[in-house]
Length: 284
Image 1 (cartoon, rainbow, N blue to C red):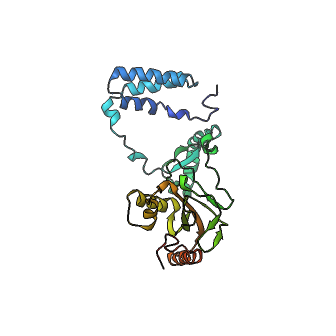
Image 2 (image 1 turned 90 degrees about the horizontal axis):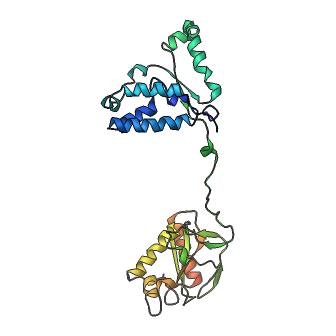
Image 3 (image 1 turned 120 degrees about the vertical axis):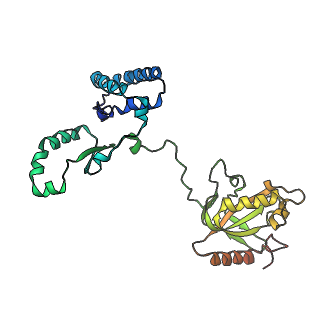
């Protein structure tokens, strides 16, 4: 078993003057018997990790002498407010620094420049060293976005758009076809998209959105569910149609303003011929 020194765990977690771990129990436990029981468990815990029993006994004795009401009162740190703080990464090799500084402080104090700058000896503090949590990554990572053209599901279990994604890269309109060469997902933003029908393959709706494809398509699903008076909702609420027949995919990725996006949307509507009655877009 690794010792605290090998693990770089600071023994000052249990300083005789502070006994912070036992003091925490004193604050939590309102009953003295409960405190003694939990303090014994904590002592066994630290003993199993090779902490010195003498250090534990001194710390526990000091905390026993502190009434709970006093322990609950925040300690004053006003006497340390003017002291400079030297922050070191906690490591066994840095432990001698405290002794060296304390032993040789009088030499530094004798220097006019140091003596004027630091009227009081510095307060040494420790920062946590890097551990495994800092170095390791999560065991489960999101799958990378596929590079092949088309629209791909984001695989989020809460996404309502994934079941309606159309993976085809060919867009067949009433007037002409269009080959999709870019990659999209439910989380793609600022794009031109198309809604198609499984039962009416050439009936298309061309739309544009600045938000994610999932957010915009969820609004279309809400229109269908609430039977709103909109072209997409009316089509999928017609005879022998349901929202399960709706499919969506990205067509064109935009990188400019909403004005340009609406212009590109209009170009697709005209070139593919998706205006009513051949499609679901209102006449231009």
